Image 1 (cartoon, rainbow over the protein chains, first blue to last red):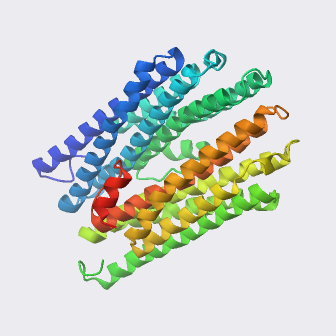
Image 2: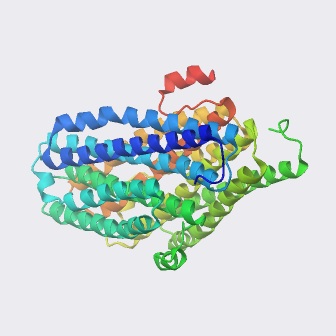
Image 3: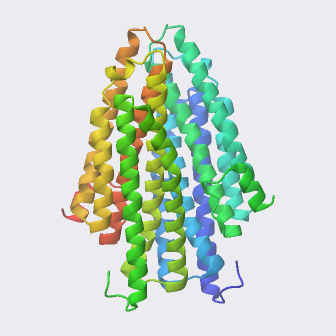
Length: 234
Length: 234
């Protein structure tokens, strides 16, 4: 990433962008972890903390986006640098939306734990989906920072696991709801919480695809996992 | 958009990108309209047609993305041209995801109409949400093509209406499900169909925000509607 330009100032600007993305990623990971604990343990203080914390994530996205636009306009980056800046613009969009999903999980945690059916969440196993989604977010960010194609490919693979776990939760909710004691309202909250976790995985997958694009210069969206494994040769 | 560069060839390249985005937008609108008809009328041929058609939308996105990356790398566009290319890169991501949501609606249409509770969809009023989502997608694309800030602002306003309609559907599903005749499975399909329509509106809103950024050079994400109306002075 360093050989294509000579300006030290420009190097420093790219490094500053990378550091901001890491910071933003750290915040988003923390938001997801807190939202999960709020969902599982019913800690309403944590839920409020996540809801309040989304603004900071949003502000970072706007700031990084401006940095990238300025770099493209003023520095006219080439090759690897340009790919890095373009991948960053996309990565922060997904990070920001992961943050939105964390906020949704926190709102669902409030709705679930403050409802008259507060025993409900114990019937639904969010832990596996939550742990997977959080791990995928962390790995996608690490893959971006270290330009680690191997790790990025792992995230793509895990997204399939998360989809399976998500459908398992749907079956749990249906089975539980068949007992007919609670009506649909708490089931809807559980469904949306699970859906938000699944979408965090989707965004991690998007980020992993940008990493592969960044390193291999190859667009791997919309191709099958088998095809991808051949292409990246991992 | 024309005064900042002199190359006719470059003008033609930008025009070609714009034409491809219009084509992609047209395909996505058609996908949404077909998915809606499949949902409301139970036309399974249409549903299959939408599911098969998503590949074409995806291929267009990859192709436009490559065009934009090449233009940035080789043409080093400035000012308005650069903002146009960057807004295009983001716009096609949202168009592609709108296409994904249309495909989800088509899959839900199949699940709903092929289930033993096929009378179910008549109880849920998707029409208003679907009409709004489709109109928002169309307006967001028009706003992008004509750089129409007024129209873009209208899309942002309509997104609030769609959110209200979406929550109305949720209440309908809950009320209907309280009757307890059908279990949860068809309710889940209806919820995900409605959620997909709501997300089409979200993507239209994202596109509208890029239009305002493109014209005003101002980032309007994460600010309130009132603040926005002051900022764009519409």
